[in-house]
Image 1 (cartoon, rainbow, N blue to C red):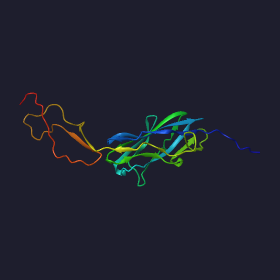
Image 2 (cartoon, rainbow, N blue to C red):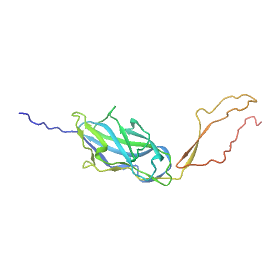
Image 3 (tube, rainbow, N blue to C red):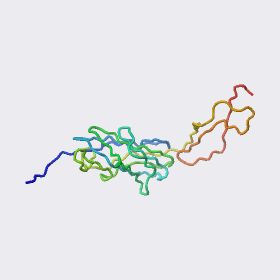
Length: 214
């Protein structure tokens, strides 16, 4: 006589609130576009994959370099771009993430490089977009939302502001002595980087501070 055993599996529940809130944002790198506090109960769980969809009006090419973090530590490889349907996936199967019991902070960081006046919004759409198993039994877990039937978890609607231009001194910009009466001498290197939209630079003015006033 074989009696079918019962077991209490881990539960994984996404919180009601997903950040960031609706806002106007400048084009920028390392922008937290989605974050949610996830409660893991009963026992540890193993996260093997998770995928998100960008549901705003921004063009796919205007947002890229997606990175996934658990409790502040990056997991998996960078998802360089959205696919044709606006999805990006993080396949963690080669090195699954152990979610300890308690509250775990999951977030996605991205670079917003274009999309002036458009919106960016990241969404965890369906239960099938998250593959989690119980740590002890290896059985798949149906994720929840606020400890009940799962529904989509959407970050805020981020409206992209007018573009901006940053000027940064390059790390290999020369320093130190130069040859007197030299020709073609490189004095400095700068990087100009446009965010939000294409920009045309028509003039650049430089001033030289000469300590000898010569």
